[in-house]
Image 1 (cartoon, rainbow, N blue to C red):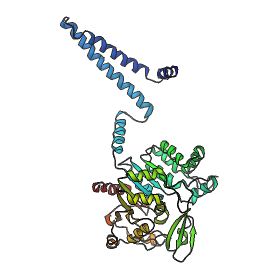
Image 2 (image 1 turned 90 degrees about the vertical axis):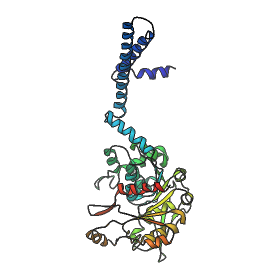
Image 3 (image 1 turned 135 degrees about the vertical axis):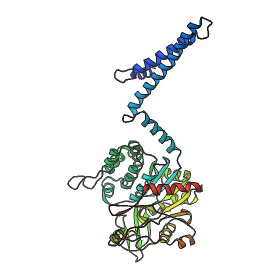
Image 4 (image 1 turned 90 degrees about the horizontal axis):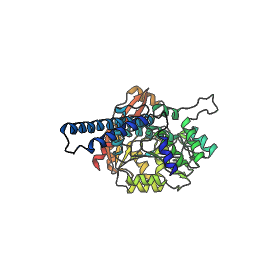
Length: 413
């Protein structure tokens, strides 16, 4: 009882800026009580008029006190927001909470671009992300600290963040080569430290999500320590996600070791509740398929009644999808998972300038061939849209356009 009363009294500490408005509200209540006590009496009309005036004054003062009290709370919890800003924030959050339940599956920069567009329309987003990465900063942290690779997770967290831009930039900040932390991003180090503190990588992601005020959730596809292995048409094999494209050979199939990692329960739950499931965009063999090699995830997607969409890459990826058409991408997905893994395939039909294509050809990358008839012949529907943007000579997915394309499938539900 003492703790409760002590907690209440803390609100009356000097400098908080609340006591005066509590007092003003109490004064308004007092006037209401005083005025209504004799309002129905049969006294002289002038006295009744004065009582009514007291009641009206009490109402005005009470409203003013409550309004000022609310502003004090707003200033504490939303220091940079004004009254109208807060209304906009509350309205936006309410609208986003009513948005469709969308699950995205993949990894890499392609998935984070999609998420940055979708978060403007729904906060019911679940990003299921591969943890097979073993290159760069993620690979070094994985090896040195025995944690799951944080890189793709970090990108998706930042993409879904509702935190200020400075906080997002902080998580993406990368130390220069002259530092002891050369090549590491702050976000990767943060996730690694959180993982060590909590003793649980999944919990580390959830705690980091609170820091970044996520519009949705980021879920690792598995918590197992998995390695991606590629088997090439010439019979050779390569271990490690970062080494697979470097071989520059035609891939026959890929698999995970150990071969049957357990899916995270949150990933399976998100798939069951999804209205739309999106595969990609992203590297076919090293970002999307690793998630589908987890049998529980493939089974849940195949059995789901959600609309299932695959966003095909615009350009082929050297050492991974050289010379691939749209149907080749789909065949690779299906052969590694299940025929019911998708319903639609979204393909870009926007034009790419010739000079940009020439520059890409120098790295053996070309436009993915849109063989629509073949895709429809194997039972999938093709949606052609222009969803690219060119920034500094690089072809990227336009997050806003891509998000609107995905959301248009809601009409099919």
